Image (cartoon, one colour):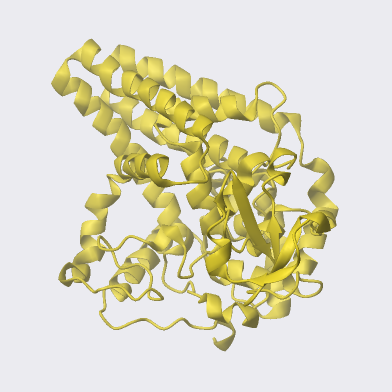
Length: 428
């Protein structure tokens, strides 16, 4: 047991890897290096190694395990974002209401069967893709691969939505990596940080300088071409799949919280992906047609990703909240006002929920990331009722077209060289 002392964030961030992993939760600093080995959520802690993990800790854990073992406490943080975990208020009430209804239903065997069926569907499409060389099949494979592998299998497995009984989690991630070329470990790092730091200065999903201006809280140089970003974004969004592989490669080299085993497995899966989606089409159909089919697949997967991810947060009306202002908000309120739902109503809303792993219910996903997406339509009713009670703005677009218009306005607004001030949702 280390002596209790006060640490700064500069000291904590030095311990951001598997051999020395510290996290901050509500004023306390924990050394969880040994706890990772017995953590029910596995190595997901590494996604927030060296950081304040209060938000994601609360969102992804039931209230009955909100108290971390005291034997891992090594000190206190000098400037805590949250002095204590929420005991009352919007988020506590929402969390308890949802857990009362759904905690006993979370480990449903049908969820796992559905996940494996999606694997089989993508595999069948891949063989049709190779055998036919058909453009339409390439389009369908790109869209389905994003839907079944990224938005559902990798995403929900990464959030520990359920435990696989048929195959180990690492096998599920490895197979998904082979069909998408992604790194589940790299995704874990970026995506968990995004959940923990939604729309603040540290959110990696808004860090696209010097390509785009997307975060007014960051003091970044305004480039002359930003005034056109609402137009050229359509071209660059088609390259998201390739950009993601560049980011994965960078993280494999530089990220300390990705283990050697994870790096090795990604190298193997990337090799398999290149053989499946580049070498095999070229050998089957020739260089030009093979590369054309690969780009068809990649661009369609990119468009689907851009369609979903950009409409989740980067839309007109959603708030940016600086870390310095966190103490003015309920923890759950931060997630609500910085997120945006779209196309959630009726039959089409449920179809969208199924095909995107609930990402169209982004508010509910950020409040309850460890719950299966099939619960989100009903959870949204609870969240809306409590948002009305606590006078919290609930951002929603009834269809994708209106959501896209909001995204276009958002990109145009941030192209302005003058900083856009963060607005408190309670002032509206």
